[in-house]
Image (cartoon, rainbow, N blue to C red):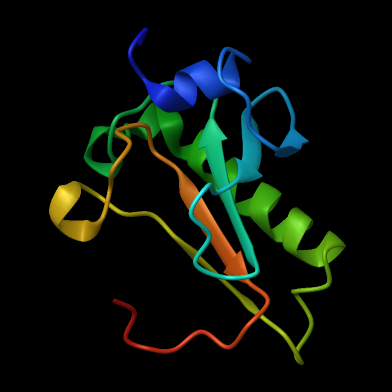
Length: 116
Protein backbone atom coordinates (compact mmCIF):
# COMPACT_ATOMS: atom_id res chain seq x y z
CA UNK A 1 0.00 0.00 0.00
CA UNK A 2 1.95 2.99 -1.25
CA UNK A 3 -0.30 5.52 0.51
CA UNK A 4 -0.35 3.80 3.92
CA UNK A 5 1.37 5.81 6.65
CA UNK A 6 2.25 2.71 8.67
CA UNK A 7 3.63 0.87 5.63
CA UNK A 8 5.88 3.88 5.05
CA UNK A 9 7.04 3.76 8.69
CA UNK A 10 7.59 0.00 8.38
CA UNK A 11 9.72 0.60 5.28
CA UNK A 12 11.72 3.44 6.86
CA UNK A 13 10.32 6.06 4.49
CA UNK A 14 8.84 8.07 7.35
CA UNK A 15 10.80 8.40 10.60
CA UNK A 16 9.43 6.97 13.83
CA UNK A 17 10.91 6.09 17.20
CA UNK A 18 11.03 2.32 16.73
CA UNK A 19 11.23 0.39 20.00
CA UNK A 20 10.84 -3.18 18.71
CA UNK A 21 11.21 -4.96 15.39
CA UNK A 22 11.24 -8.58 14.27
CA UNK A 23 10.36 -10.48 11.11
CA UNK A 24 6.58 -10.19 11.75
CA UNK A 25 6.00 -6.77 13.30
CA UNK A 26 7.41 -3.42 14.27
CA UNK A 27 6.52 -1.22 17.26
CA UNK A 28 7.01 2.50 17.60
CA UNK A 29 5.98 5.35 19.85
CA UNK A 30 2.62 6.99 19.13
CA UNK A 31 3.03 10.60 17.98
CA UNK A 32 0.02 11.63 20.11
CA UNK A 33 0.53 9.58 23.30
CA UNK A 34 -2.43 9.03 25.59
CA UNK A 35 -0.27 7.60 28.40
CA UNK A 36 3.40 7.82 29.43
CA UNK A 37 3.95 4.64 27.43
CA UNK A 38 1.91 4.54 24.23
CA UNK A 39 3.30 2.22 21.59
CA UNK A 40 1.81 0.92 18.35
CA UNK A 41 2.52 -2.64 17.19
CA UNK A 42 1.90 -3.15 13.48
CA UNK A 43 2.34 -6.25 11.36
CA UNK A 44 4.62 -6.01 8.35
CA UNK A 45 1.69 -7.34 6.33
CA UNK A 46 -0.79 -4.63 5.40
CA UNK A 47 -4.23 -5.49 6.80
CA UNK A 48 -6.62 -2.50 6.79
CA UNK A 49 -8.98 -3.36 9.69
CA UNK A 50 -9.73 -6.11 12.17
CA UNK A 51 -12.57 -7.09 9.82
CA UNK A 52 -9.97 -7.95 7.17
CA UNK A 53 -8.08 -10.44 9.35
CA UNK A 54 -8.38 -13.98 7.96
CA UNK A 55 -7.78 -17.35 9.56
CA UNK A 56 -4.38 -17.28 7.83
CA UNK A 57 -3.53 -14.20 9.93
CA UNK A 58 -4.24 -15.77 13.33
CA UNK A 59 -0.59 -16.40 14.19
CA UNK A 60 0.36 -12.92 13.02
CA UNK A 61 -2.25 -11.27 15.26
CA UNK A 62 -1.26 -13.46 18.20
CA UNK A 63 2.32 -12.40 17.60
CA UNK A 64 1.33 -8.73 17.98
CA UNK A 65 -0.03 -9.52 21.44
CA UNK A 66 2.97 -11.60 22.57
CA UNK A 67 5.34 -8.90 21.29
CA UNK A 68 3.40 -6.24 23.20
CA UNK A 69 3.54 -8.37 26.37
CA UNK A 70 7.30 -8.82 25.95
CA UNK A 71 7.89 -5.08 25.62
CA UNK A 72 5.53 -4.36 28.55
CA UNK A 73 7.53 -6.78 30.72
CA UNK A 74 10.84 -5.24 29.62
CA UNK A 75 9.55 -1.78 30.56
CA UNK A 76 8.27 -2.87 33.97
CA UNK A 77 4.56 -2.57 33.22
CA UNK A 78 3.59 -6.24 33.56
CA UNK A 79 3.76 -6.78 37.33
CA UNK A 80 0.76 -6.73 39.67
CA UNK A 81 1.60 -3.21 40.90
CA UNK A 82 1.45 -1.68 37.45
CA UNK A 83 -0.39 -3.00 34.43
CA UNK A 84 -1.10 -2.05 30.86
CA UNK A 85 -3.84 -2.01 28.27
CA UNK A 86 -3.79 -3.33 24.71
CA UNK A 87 -6.50 -2.36 22.23
CA UNK A 88 -7.30 -2.31 18.52
CA UNK A 89 -9.79 0.15 17.06
CA UNK A 90 -11.86 -0.77 14.02
CA UNK A 91 -13.12 1.95 11.68
CA UNK A 92 -13.35 5.68 12.24
CA UNK A 93 -16.30 5.61 14.66
CA UNK A 94 -14.17 3.50 17.03
CA UNK A 95 -11.16 5.80 16.66
CA UNK A 96 -9.17 4.12 13.87
CA UNK A 97 -7.36 6.83 11.92
CA UNK A 98 -4.77 4.74 10.05
CA UNK A 99 -6.19 1.80 8.15
CA UNK A 100 -3.42 -0.70 8.84
CA UNK A 101 -4.21 -2.79 11.91
CA UNK A 102 -2.26 -1.74 14.96
CA UNK A 103 -2.27 -2.78 18.57
CA UNK A 104 -2.01 0.07 21.06
CA UNK A 105 -0.02 -0.60 24.23
CA UNK A 106 -0.81 1.98 26.92
CA UNK A 107 0.85 2.04 30.33
CA UNK A 108 2.53 4.19 32.92
CA UNK A 109 -0.57 5.62 34.61
CA UNK A 110 -3.88 4.33 35.97
CA UNK A 111 -6.21 3.65 33.05
CA UNK A 112 -9.90 4.25 33.71
CA UNK A 113 -12.90 2.33 32.47
CA UNK A 114 -14.83 2.81 30.33
CA UNK A 115 -12.34 4.37 27.95
CA UNK A 116 -13.29 7.30 25.76
